[in-house]
Image 1 (tube, rainbow over the protein chains, first blue to last red):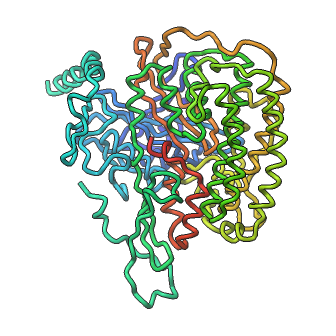
Image 2: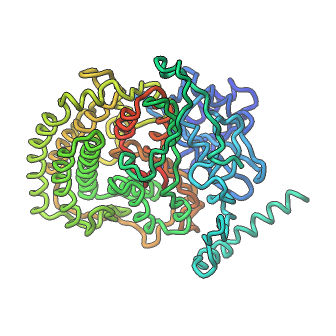
Image 3: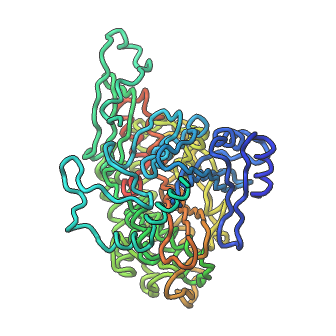
Amino acid sequence: MHNQLAELINKNVLGASAVVNKTEDAKTHASITVEASAIYKVAEFLKTNTEMPFNALQAVSGVDYLEYIEVCYIMGHFDMNAPRDLILKVKITDRVNGNVDSIVKLYPAANFQERECYDMFGIKFNNHPDHRRILCPDDWEGFPLRKDYIAQKTYNGMEVFPDSKSNMEDREYIVRQGMIKKAQEGAANKVQ
Amino acid sequence: MQSRWDIGEPERPTINAETEQLKSELLRLNMGPQHPATHGVLRIEIWTDSEIVAHAIPHLGYLHRCMEKHTENLDYRGIIPFVDRLDYIAAMSMEWGYAMAVEKMLGTEVPRRAELLRILTGELQRIASHLMAFGTYALDLGAFTPFLYAFEMREKILRLFEEVSGARLLYNYIWIGGVWNDWTDEQLNRVTAFCDEMEEEAKKYHELVSMNKIFIERTANVGVFTVQDCFDYGATGPVLRGSGHKWDLRKNMPYSLYSEFDFDIPVGIAEVGVVGDCWNRYIVRMKEVIESIKIIRQVQAKLEPGSIMGKVPKIIKLPKGEIFMRSECPRGELGLHLVSEGPEAKTPYRLKVKSPCFTHVSMLPHAAPGQMIADFVATVGSIDIVLGEVDR
């Protein structure tokens, strides 16, 4: 199904360059990666085409791989004759100003989902009607689900993450995994 | 950064033509976070023109624990108590959805008896959850008695769960590979007795509430969601079925052993109002209780002695890849997007929870404009939210 769909997308959407991420066994699910700049047109095509339509957006999720952040749009087709799922991905390499077009106009479900993605990963969604944080307070610093995130020590004068109470094992774990180091190396390589 | 108090007055729709000549300003009210009708710590900012709601803006996050971040530092077995605390009214369904996602990636075979016991507990949990929804919904609308009836029956299910798992609400009962504890014959006999009693009780509920004139006046033709609205917002579960779309994962994309069972999918009907109103969402839940009883009876006919735990390695290591696993919970579809980095990692790289209530809360700003405040309370109650799952 994924190969056929990727061909359809490439044929109908200019500049989408859809690639199928294959799986080795039946235990995991395949997905399709498209260009971040073409996401609105791809979503429009997925919603309106007649061969393989997707009538619902189930979730917008993110995965931080340090070199890039992946935004996963999980689509679904709620039809008893042809139920199907799709994980559609875009890669965003800019960790500071990373942005992607919002698809709220096509799927209103994306409103809250994209706000959550912004809240947790710091991806900006262009043309979003209500672009605010949703789960964290508006003046919270940092994006909690990034792998190099360390919570702020004080919030509005309140101590929220004191050294005495913070779980040092967790911090050491992060350092042990070399995640922060890996991120710095990745950034340094890009500069060279 | 924009503060949540600086949104400014939203554009004013023509909602109240009669009093439009008064040119009064919209009044901003906070519903919650301690309002009893919001079923938890949800704050809804409503802009009203006299008694009529112009805008509703939900503010979430009062129960945010960032459970998704916690799971990145926990091993796969240690996550089960955390998913319990998502939907604390229907914890069994949450555990089951998570266990299925890990088992699918691990390739574990779950023994037949364990699968049947999962269906048994899952359906009992569905009844308990719908009874809670029934009781509190009637309470929202001003009827106190149904709440007492509902909790009397719900207590019987919780007693059974307590005996089997040791806890009343947060069970940690469904483990990866099977279930923790077996049910004795005496407990299964009590389930049979409960089913018979529940069927009789359900008739009483219908006479007391479903066909009650006051209840119908409060809920029929109120808070209507069309099928297209449900697709647009990604609504699932009783909300989608109440709008008349026949969609249930247990039938349409069967998981576990559901393909062996015979049951119907109740959908919304235009009996007292229009399809997709609050009454339909309520009645779909009450009909699902009857369908769940049907499934439980079939489970008991199929149960045979056997193993309740499959072969699972001591330290669970998943192959590299990702999975999106959906399961039908009492409130809608739970989706778990589980990403694993490979066999070296003992923890998930990322676990995203697609919660049904989160999507349903996002429908409230769409439903609110033009409703009376009391009708809006009825709409909030009819989607049956649990804030542990919305905020995660």
